[in-house]
Length: 111
Image 1 (cartoon, helix red, strand yellow):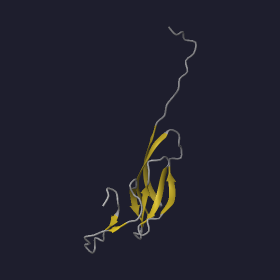
Image 2 (cartoon, rainbow, N blue to C red):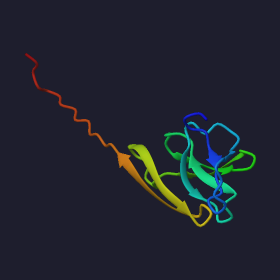
Image 3 (cartoon, rainbow, N blue to C red):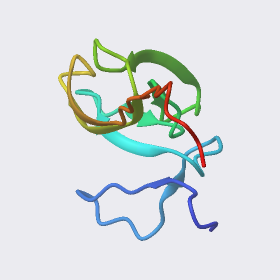
Image 4 (cartoon, helix red, strand yellow):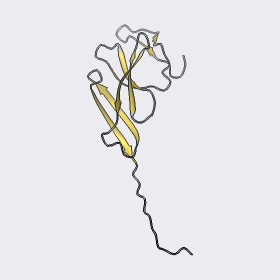
């Protein structure tokens, strides 16, 4: 099994072997499960705004769910998504903003 391959185990049955989840999940960060446990919500990259996808655990099919970004996008460098609940309808996130100020000075002699 590769470093970031996904496998599902049935904890109620005490399975020793997992069922592989199709697809490439090397860059996925799991954010939560759907209520019916058929899907997981993931962030697939560190792009800004945060792109959230739903992954079907049977087929590996991905569906774009939403973008997460604060209303004022000025200077936002990174968006960290916490957890997703209620089938992806509720979520938490934090963000890092970098603001700079340019100051123009004129009329000062340069030596």
